[in-house]
Image: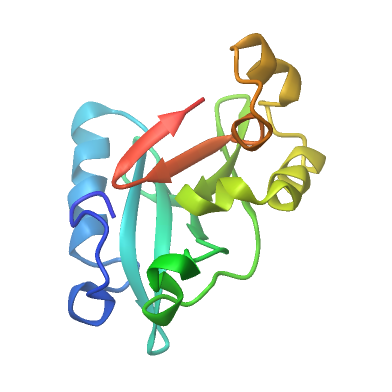
Length: 150
């Protein structure tokens, strides 16, 4: 939720995958000739999702990921539907697994990503100094509107 910040106002702030947020980030990707990762509140079939999108430098959508584990302790699951499957994307030769915030607390999700031969694995993360089990499972995580490659 890069432009909105985290909110429970999913009904009021949701948009289709090719909505205003996508068009904005698509134009930035083209202008800067850069890959863009951004969180949006996606509306699809009368359901709302906390969604991460990857837009390539040409401005086209490469991949989307719908958060699989809404944070139930805060009530997020009452406002957002859970996604159904992991997602991988690619930049040049790097394969990148996508997660959003609370997803990083579920090692089985990251293990599925590693089985898909992500370019980031436990060895890379441990070399970077991340020894906490949950943090060692992070590939790319977005939380509170910020992308944080580890």
